[in-house]
Image (cartoon, rainbow, N blue to C red):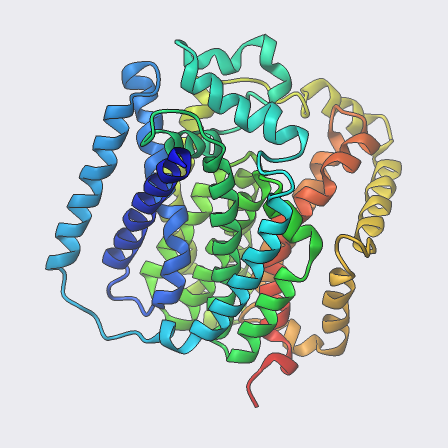
Length: 449
């Protein structure tokens, strides 16, 4: 019980920090309160992780007093600023959408708990061999840089530290390790991810909200990935938040939303290495439309491209600082192996192997229940709506991410079939919520009559 209370206090403080910070900054933007409700955990927890990471350098380890005091001080300052800020127009989006959000999130929580209570400590090798082990080494070791030692090279020492530090933050109020922290993180981020998609989709109509929400929670692999406590659901959360915010920015013509979108895209880079790829893909898709998109919309794409890039630069620099000063080579991408694959002529057969594994994953009825063929069918039946120039950048951003993953698989130093079998389903979950939002909100049958 003490562990549950500890994690609950820590993550409630983070949620309040995120909610107040977003509400203060987005005061002039027409951002729905229901959306901020689910964006707040990511923003607030990143603030907490930043404080913990700063403490590692100031005190050469975790300082409980510093972390708690800094978070509480930040919360007090934000409360004072929020109280003095002028109130914007009343937003009753929560009142309008509460039925959808309540029903979908309750069902999602029920399905998640059914998975998580079977293995409340998390399942899967990566959960223990990478994330929880790093959290323990940082928390207990007198030298936190032990996570980069050769003895722990199997634990991806090059991975950023958002997840293990977020776990440690859940331990600090109680002063000891608790499985409730990782359990709570999995629950918070999975439900918040669902909430982001439902809230943004419901703005286009209640049908879209219901359809997107029920579609997400009906996919066994999505719920299973959330309940497994892998970091991949956190990656999907930041990806989806960035895309949804930018889509809202275009609809409202608001630069503040575009900047916050860039912030979430930048934050993803400190969750896993894949976040760096997403930030590049996200910016490239916006840049392409700024240059080649419809002439009438090029100026706004150009403006929001620079605004989003500015928003994400600090967080990109934060990740670059970690990578530079705590450099550890990525064992999957070795220069000599990349040169070998590019010059040996095996790119084509490796491409065939990747595609065969991908198509096999698409038709796994016990995990994906044919959601990918559903997307293809929507594209075939409604090509004009799907290829709407105003929203096609969303598809391209997710598409470029997956092309990037395919390129990494092509030159990986590990055995390709083994690597695909171990990770393909997990990297597919990163962009699945984005594709759900893109296809289901654009389909005519999801629109209000």
